[in-house]
Image (cartoon, rainbow over all chains, first blue to last red; front, side):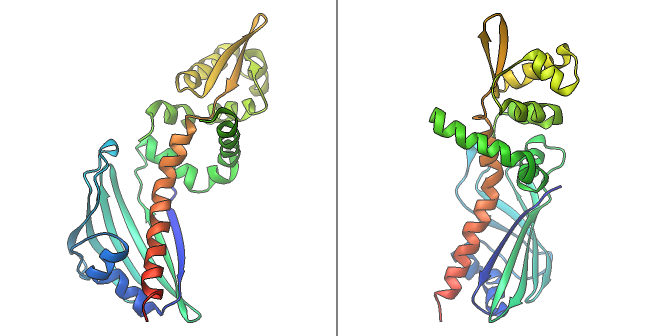
Length: 145
Length: 103
């Protein structure tokens, strides 16, 4: 099963990045309004715009699963059809911090999520997906659609 | 969420391979069958699923039916798959800007 992995270098020490992850006001400024508390087991929500066509009412239901300052934060992430997990890892790098974000736990039994993850997650992206995507680009140029 | 038909269509490795083959241009059924050492009815069945998903179009050339790739429905699959990746990339950048912009 694939996962979404994103990494971002932040030119600030891990302690400051940790604060941006775990202070609800700071968290709201770069992610979404929330009632987060840095306590394992705490249940909270993020609130954003609903996306009715994805069956998403705009509320992400979360729970703090793991907390290891200033290195690791893991929360559950449930909203719309998703029942997933998001993990942030902080790795000191020079005078800054490498922030690694992993969004995983996509549903193996939902063909749509499975296929989407396969496309994103490796096997397909490097192999057939690369070629399919180049076809898409050609089709877009030719067909205007 | 994209059309379930498209996901069903590309869930099969054989059908993905057929799509890949058709990148080279339109082909008649027997040509596709020969490429996969499959019987014509088996290939026709796969082509039918692909056609219903809008991934393959049929065109008549002389007395033969040729099958042509139309990759456009895959756009929705790719868009959906990329949604969460873009979401996190975007917000990770915002986090960086928030911290780096403050002294």
